[in-house]
Image 1 (cartoon, one colour):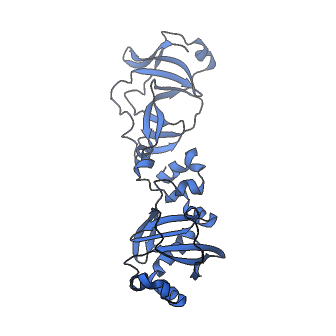
Image 2 (cartoon, one colour):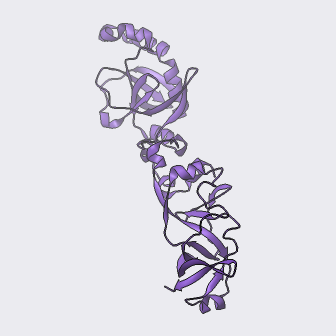
Image 3 (cartoon, one colour):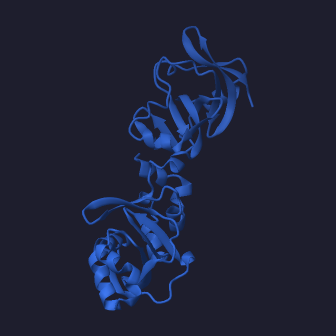
Length: 293
């Protein structure tokens, strides 16, 4: 599984609204400003010194507030006196200087954008989405169209530390096998279940009851009803560790010949049916049952 597939399988993110994605610290839209590759992120609320434009995305009216930037060379020359500049001249300068910004927004919102004129009464800050891309600060009406276009999972930066730090409980699985109903019913304290896999094969990690991490990467977990021998104590795995294990999960699982697993649980269909310790019968690794919950 790739990082985006992992995200899409976690209920928090699978069911996240567009607004929740946009407001995440990990929100980052890779885009282009002219020939430059850039990243659009949320920015701080700007002061009132902005050029407020009325624009259409498709047929939906929006306000686009543009802050002063050295990139906008012609606008910069008249910025301090722009209240005295005729509207048509200001719009022509905006078309010339801000064309790359307009094209970027059109591409990200995925609707044709058209400059209508100068905005009348400015929208309140609560109705605006403030953003930064390269050396440009701007704000755009926080419409459903904008949120829907911006708020998609692929616009989350999987290198963001806040996102990567999300933690999940996991259990290390050392063996899985089928036991008949009769064998299950006869299990008792002192019994031993042979575990030939231990020491000869790598373990695997079941994370959040949802993912399996193995030497070949991350996949979705499916409980097939077999008995599973797992670590007695859970361990924490971060989302970042899952992302890093997308191609190779060997860093998270026990290698053949590694340290003995210690205390263990026998689990079936998500329920602990026996507890015990790692031991041996002759030369064979085994789970020695010490308690039956």
